[in-house]
Amino acid sequence: MKKVILISAFLGLATTYSYGQTYYYKCVASFDKDGVKSACDKLDIITFINNKRMCYPSDKDGNKLYNAVAAVTFSFIETLNGSTHVYHGKRDVINLLYNPYIGGSRYHQVDYYMYFSSDFNQLRNVGSATDGSYTEYKRTTPEEEKRNKYDDSKIPVF
Image (tube, rainbow, N blue to C red; front, side, top):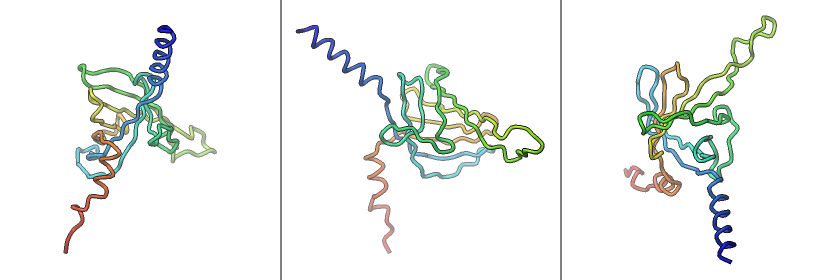
């Protein structure tokens, strides 16, 4: 009987562990290639799978998004200085100069990198390794986002 309970507990843990972990990230600021800061007000949801060896943009239920940038699946490549987790992904971008009469490729690939803090509470999303622009995020919760979105104290009183 003890073996059955132990095996059931192990299978339950293994099943739970194989599912993804979904985190909410609130954009703090965007920086262009010259380091000029601009405000941003967006929420990204990232789901981690395979013991955080891979991640992808998702909805709140962990379902992968398939729009332009979000179709990328990122793979863990290394941990820098024991504190920064680096993920890499590639996506196909339409070549605007493509001409079927001249030839060439209709798409080209762009590298994307995501740098997470050791506790996964902060994210730096680098759109392209050569571009130099990036976006900073801070981890949040759905409840906190609802509270901030409908905060009555932010409504101006005239």
